[in-house]
Length: 217
Image 1: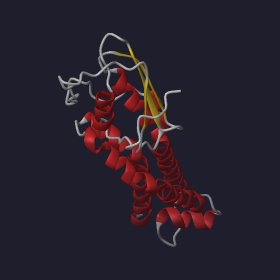
Image 2: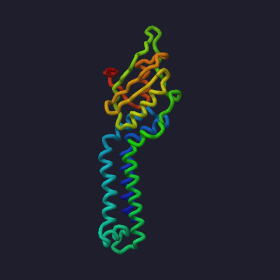
Image 3: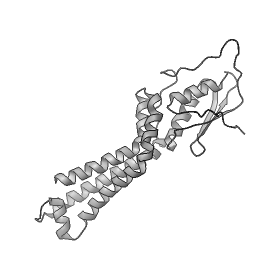
Image 4: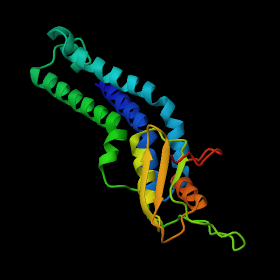
């Protein structure tokens, strides 16, 4: 059974690695290491398709072996050439289906995170906003839009959006994952400058291209 357990562990680890492009940044932000979230996401994102292939390939092969004709499936669950009882084979099948469910859960995690409460910290815990220089006071803008680099899933966009909405003086914020763009609508009571928005996005672990802000029309 040792080989079977190793295969199960490998499939779970591969699926977990495939989810780290978005789960990892959430955990880092919750622990107060939001500055590293973007780097973690960018590192794991290119590996996600390959890790998913490995995870589903291993668990798929396990299911195939366990559901082959009786003499082969029995050998697969016992690890020897002898027959094994139907109860043991049933347990192996149930366990493998459970592993399959966990692999699916890990694979879908970047999309499921959109529907859970945000883990990003409030602005009072570690985000330092730049202040305007006395000689050139900043004026509030009617609408600010920025291109964002480093988002790898809708959960990334949700995390940035929540952080922007917590900014004082922000009426609304919207982050479009498809367009890789964030837009902020100030209330008009408090001056929201480009520097402050960029600081919040950067603290969330994502980068703003030099050419930002993006056109707001």
